[in-house]
Image (cartoon, rainbow, N blue to C red; front, side, top):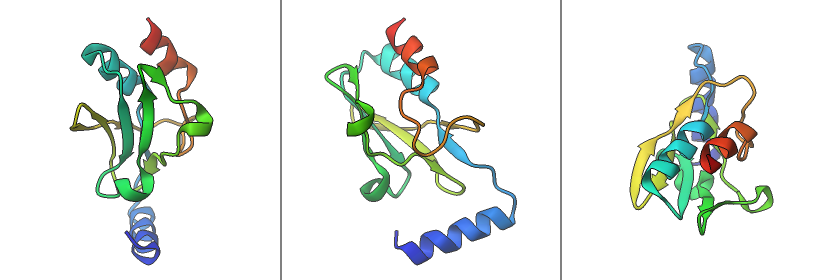
Length: 112
């Protein structure tokens, strides 16, 4: 998506009072555990080229410095990809934003 289109979509979403959708790290951790995933990525629907990135490699959370995903939007849904399957994976969270990477709550779920 080009910058001008993204700006217009953001402006329209703010005008209608849209709430920020952030990647749901806790749900992602549960999905990863349930599926025994060794690899997982996250990104924004229809914009993975610019927003996607690995969040789990070799069964371990990607370190903050290696996680380049941008995972929040007013109009595009954050997703997780596990074993080639894309799933919606978002929530409204006051403490998480586009740059949140593996908060303690998600790490606890992942390692339980």
